[in-house]
Structures are given as structure tokens and as C-alpha cells.
Figure 1 (cartoon, rainbow over the protein chains, first blue to last red):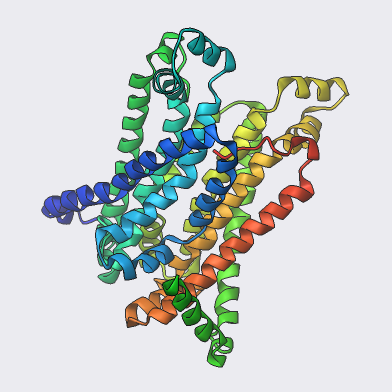
Figure 2 (cartoon, rainbow over the protein chains, first blue to last red):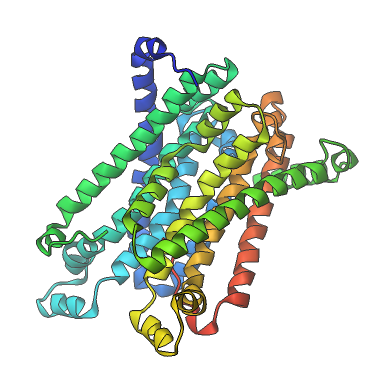
Length: 217
Length: 228
């Protein structure tokens, strides 16, 4: 395996640009996924009958290969970034919805009762007690969703929207190892940094876990 | 709705054309290739993931390391790995290795979490009944962890079946061939045909695992599994 370091040095700017596009394509879907699963998870928790069908739909969508899902959306959104981001959003749901529901379910009954006894209404209890307690489990799901999303985006290059996937395909077409390795390693690095950031966010959002001397994750 | 009907119609005319059913580019041949790639990778991944997960979960040592490695492995883009290794050596092995790398993390993590979460009282009871380390693992921990382990296997199986489509890009056939060819030729019918076949295959995998869950999991445990 020979790596052409001077090529990497010469193409730092394009690689950075592709990495930024890559991050946007991968992480916006996870954000949208959270925006959908948080309210949906709360509703599922409220009305239990909603959960099995919601989970089944999310799981069936997850079974569709990414390439196939991109193809299906091409005829609606064309060769645009949305065609990559909509499927990735749908994928994230199969991890995020169960984790939001499990997270809310992890609130122990005495804690809920205590909040009610303190005069918290449903909304205030949700925002100030239940959601904060659910944070570790929700973030655990978000980490899996974000990391898989970052590694999936590369496939989007087959329809022309892949961030660093461009360098993987270009390197393959030119039989130029350096470009493939550089892009692949960058993708792994992006995933690791994103994961570390999410862990930090979790620690900031749950100061009580640290106070107990042990981070819940 | 009309749109959906058009797609089904498109798929049906494609599926029932007689030319689809023989030769190297026929559905049976492509389907077998796809099943072969997916089956071999899943089997290897199951052996690695189960063995590591059971050992680490049972002994309780190296858990953090195993989970961290599994999480990093999740970040490796399969697509990049496949194309990179194929450039070095053009053979199907790299594709299989990439699929195994994709399938190990969910199996490993779920097996580990499943075994670790076994109620210590149940383990104590098994020891009290005279079971040794292996006996506890095989007859108490494994059956109790089975719902989570199956869930991990299912996640991996679906990912592998869906991702094996990538094998077609460097030219190893499988059902992805139709999608990639269709895309290259602007033949939408071919794309829809390949897509529907892969989706059907993934759904069949889901059904098989739903059946397995009913068959091999102790009834006392059902309804307590959750995904991770």
C-alpha cells in the first residue's frame, strides 16, 4: 500500500470541502430524525397502542437498502441533496424512536410521583423531569444514528451527492489508492469526532451523573 | 397512489419477462450470488461476534475495549473499504471482509449486553444447581440473553442483505447489479426491479427472525427484549 502524501497535501482544500459537505449530508438527517422521534416517542409513551405500528414502519424502512431508497426518491427530489438526506432521516428513526421511548420509560415511578406531588403539570414534568432523565438513552441512540449516517453518506455518491464518497469513487475509477484511503480515514475520523462531541454533550446535559461519580451511558 | 401502482406495474412486467429467468444476468443466478455473499458474511460475523460477545460478557473483562472497537468499526464506510481493497486485489474476498466488518458490531454489542444484563440471582441459582462456568454460560446466560442476541443477528442480517448490493459496483454481481446497471443506463425499470427484489429479501429476513424468535426463545422471556 503506497500512500502519496504530496497528493494529500495538495488536495487539502478539496478534501476539507468534501468533508464539510459530508458532515452536513450526514448530520442534518440525524437532527431531523431527533425532531421527529422526540415528539413521536412522547406520543407513543402516552398512547401505548401507537408504539408497535410506529416501530414496525421504522423497521421496515430500515430494511430498504440505502442505494434502493435513494433510487426511489430520485423521481421525487431528483439528483439533489434531499434525495440522500430523506432516506438517512428515515433510517435514523429505527434507532431513535425506540431509544426515546425506552428513555422515557426509564423514568422511575417514584420520581414521576414526586414531580406530580410538587405540582408539576404534564408539560412541565415532561420538559424538566422526564426528558432530562431520558437524555443518556436518547444520546446513546443518537450516537449510533450519527456514526452510521456518516459512514452511509458515501454511497450517495452513486447519485452524485456523497461528500467524501466522491473521492472514494474517483480513486476507484483512477485506481488511485491514496484518494480512497484518505477519504475513508477522514470519514472514520469525522465519525469519531462526532461521537466524542455527543458524549461531551451528554455529560454537560446530565451533570448529576458525574456527581454520582459514574457516567451513565 | 397512482404512482405506487405504476411502480408495481413496472416491477411486474420486468419480473415476468422470460429473459429475466435464465442466464448469467437472470434473477435466479443474481439472487443466488446475493444470498451466497450475504450468507457467508453473516455466518463469519456471527461466529466472531457471538464468540467474543459471550466470552467478554461471561468473564466481564475487556467489555469497554470490545464495545469501543465495535463502535469504531461501525464508523468504517463499507463502500470505501470495499473499493479500497478491490483496488489492491481484485477478488470477492475484500467484499466479504467488508460485509463481515459491517455485521460484527451489532451482534457483538447485543451479545455482550445480553449476557451482561442476566440477573445475577439467575446465575447464582445456576451455580447453586451445580453448574460450572460453561454450564452457566450455555444453560443459563445464553438462553436468557437470546432475545437480544437474535435482535443483533437480525439487524446485521438486514444490513448485510441490503449492503451486499454494493458488491455489484466493482463487478461481482448479486442483486445490486440491476440497480447499478439501471442507474448507468438510465433504465428506471431495471432500478425498480432490483430495488424491489432486495427489499423483498430483507423483509423475508425479518420474517425468518420473527419466526425464530417464537421458536427458540423461552416463552417466559418474550416481551422483554429491546433493541440497542
